[in-house]
Length: 127
Image 1 (tube, rainbow, N blue to C red):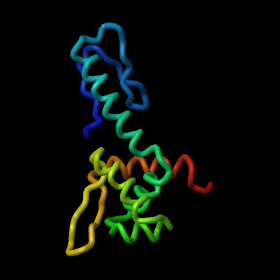
Image 2: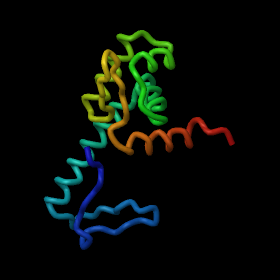
Image 3: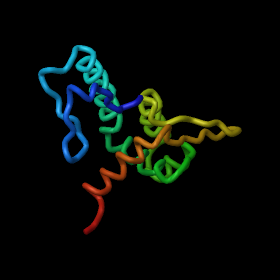
Protein backbone atom coordinates (compact mmCIF):
# COMPACT_ATOMS: atom_id res chain seq x y z
CA UNK A 1 0.00 0.00 0.00
CA UNK A 2 1.80 3.08 -1.23
CA UNK A 3 0.42 6.33 0.14
CA UNK A 4 2.31 8.89 -1.90
CA UNK A 5 0.41 11.45 -3.93
CA UNK A 6 1.67 11.98 -7.44
CA UNK A 7 0.02 14.82 -9.31
CA UNK A 8 0.90 17.14 -12.17
CA UNK A 9 2.95 20.07 -10.86
CA UNK A 10 1.01 22.46 -13.12
CA UNK A 11 -2.24 21.80 -11.25
CA UNK A 12 -1.08 22.04 -7.65
CA UNK A 13 0.64 24.25 -5.17
CA UNK A 14 2.50 22.95 -2.14
CA UNK A 15 1.94 24.45 1.32
CA UNK A 16 4.88 25.25 3.62
CA UNK A 17 4.21 21.94 5.41
CA UNK A 18 4.65 20.07 2.12
CA UNK A 19 0.99 19.19 1.65
CA UNK A 20 -0.44 19.78 -1.82
CA UNK A 21 -3.20 22.31 -2.38
CA UNK A 22 -5.80 20.99 -4.77
CA UNK A 23 -7.82 23.18 -7.08
CA UNK A 24 -10.72 23.03 -9.53
CA UNK A 25 -8.36 22.83 -12.52
CA UNK A 26 -7.19 19.31 -11.63
CA UNK A 27 -7.58 16.81 -14.45
CA UNK A 28 -9.74 13.71 -14.05
CA UNK A 29 -6.66 11.47 -13.81
CA UNK A 30 -5.31 13.48 -10.85
CA UNK A 31 -8.70 13.37 -9.11
CA UNK A 32 -8.91 9.59 -9.65
CA UNK A 33 -5.40 9.15 -8.22
CA UNK A 34 -6.35 11.31 -5.26
CA UNK A 35 -9.43 9.14 -4.62
CA UNK A 36 -7.35 5.97 -4.86
CA UNK A 37 -4.81 7.35 -2.39
CA UNK A 38 -7.62 8.43 -0.04
CA UNK A 39 -9.06 4.90 -0.11
CA UNK A 40 -5.67 3.34 0.65
CA UNK A 41 -5.05 5.81 3.48
CA UNK A 42 -8.52 5.18 4.87
CA UNK A 43 -8.01 1.41 4.88
CA UNK A 44 -4.64 1.83 6.61
CA UNK A 45 -6.09 4.14 9.28
CA UNK A 46 -9.07 1.84 9.87
CA UNK A 47 -6.72 -1.09 10.36
CA UNK A 48 -4.74 0.72 13.06
CA UNK A 49 -7.77 2.36 14.70
CA UNK A 50 -8.14 -0.30 17.40
CA UNK A 51 -6.27 -0.02 20.69
CA UNK A 52 -5.20 -3.67 20.55
CA UNK A 53 -3.78 -3.28 17.07
CA UNK A 54 -2.06 -0.03 18.07
CA UNK A 55 -0.42 -1.80 21.00
CA UNK A 56 0.76 -4.61 18.71
CA UNK A 57 2.28 -2.01 16.39
CA UNK A 58 3.97 -0.31 19.36
CA UNK A 59 5.64 -3.58 20.29
CA UNK A 60 6.55 -4.50 16.71
CA UNK A 61 8.06 -1.05 16.09
CA UNK A 62 10.98 -2.16 18.29
CA UNK A 63 11.45 -5.39 16.35
CA UNK A 64 10.09 -8.79 15.44
CA UNK A 65 8.04 -10.66 18.08
CA UNK A 66 6.45 -14.09 18.32
CA UNK A 67 2.73 -14.46 18.89
CA UNK A 68 3.54 -15.80 22.38
CA UNK A 69 5.67 -12.74 23.17
CA UNK A 70 2.86 -10.45 22.02
CA UNK A 71 0.37 -12.37 24.19
CA UNK A 72 2.58 -11.82 27.23
CA UNK A 73 3.33 -8.16 26.44
CA UNK A 74 -0.36 -7.40 25.90
CA UNK A 75 -1.67 -9.66 28.70
CA UNK A 76 -4.12 -11.00 26.14
CA UNK A 77 -5.36 -14.40 25.05
CA UNK A 78 -3.86 -16.02 21.98
CA UNK A 79 -7.16 -15.86 20.10
CA UNK A 80 -7.47 -12.09 20.62
CA UNK A 81 -3.87 -11.44 19.53
CA UNK A 82 -4.25 -13.70 16.50
CA UNK A 83 -7.47 -11.93 15.47
CA UNK A 84 -5.78 -8.52 15.58
CA UNK A 85 -2.68 -9.81 13.78
CA UNK A 86 -4.94 -11.27 11.10
CA UNK A 87 -6.47 -7.85 10.40
CA UNK A 88 -3.03 -6.19 10.29
CA UNK A 89 -1.77 -8.94 7.97
CA UNK A 90 -4.82 -8.56 5.70
CA UNK A 91 -4.00 -4.87 5.27
CA UNK A 92 -0.34 -5.62 4.58
CA UNK A 93 0.88 -3.86 7.72
CA UNK A 94 2.57 -6.87 9.32
CA UNK A 95 4.15 -9.99 7.88
CA UNK A 96 4.62 -13.42 9.45
CA UNK A 97 7.72 -15.61 9.44
CA UNK A 98 7.63 -19.21 10.61
CA UNK A 99 10.61 -20.70 12.42
CA UNK A 100 9.80 -24.21 13.56
CA UNK A 101 6.68 -24.01 15.71
CA UNK A 102 7.02 -20.28 16.35
CA UNK A 103 5.49 -17.60 14.15
CA UNK A 104 7.27 -14.26 14.23
CA UNK A 105 5.63 -11.03 13.17
CA UNK A 106 7.28 -7.85 11.98
CA UNK A 107 6.23 -4.61 10.35
CA UNK A 108 6.03 -4.75 6.57
CA UNK A 109 7.51 -1.30 6.00
CA UNK A 110 8.34 1.97 7.74
CA UNK A 111 4.86 3.54 7.48
CA UNK A 112 3.66 1.94 10.69
CA UNK A 113 6.77 3.02 12.56
CA UNK A 114 6.33 6.58 11.26
CA UNK A 115 2.68 6.62 12.36
CA UNK A 116 3.57 5.21 15.78
CA UNK A 117 6.22 7.91 16.22
CA UNK A 118 3.61 10.60 15.50
CA UNK A 119 1.06 8.96 17.83
CA UNK A 120 3.71 8.76 20.55
CA UNK A 121 4.63 12.44 20.09
CA UNK A 122 0.99 13.54 20.19
CA UNK A 123 -0.41 11.28 22.92
CA UNK A 124 2.28 9.55 24.95
CA UNK A 125 5.41 11.66 25.28
CA UNK A 126 5.78 13.40 28.60
CA UNK A 127 6.86 17.04 28.30
